[in-house]
Length: 108
Image 1 (cartoon, rainbow, N blue to C red):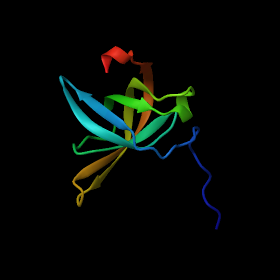
Image 2 (tube, one colour):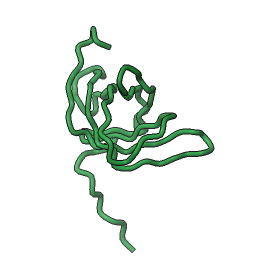
Image 3 (cartoon, helix red, strand yellow):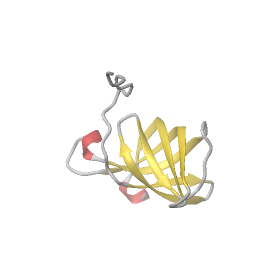
Image 4 (cartoon, rainbow, N blue to C red):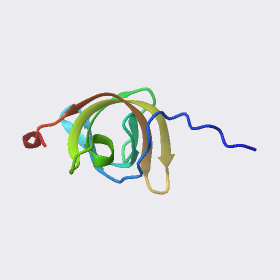
């Protein structure tokens, strides 16, 4: 039996990088499990629904943006899949980036 062909259009990078989900005036700390030019998988401690558009600030790795150092970006991302881990009390979220904007270093 052959493996199903990869449906992703961008290479995933297994990187644990800091992120924060912006909800009104509050921030939910999160970490990437993997990230690509088109999306990411985040792990955090709050439940979120599939289909929601999230505001996220995250550190983009040089493998994606080029250059010599990682940079902070603000993005909006559509939640495509949610995975609960009851033992760790965490949630994993696969999200597709719909908009992306480089943040000035003074805004972080």
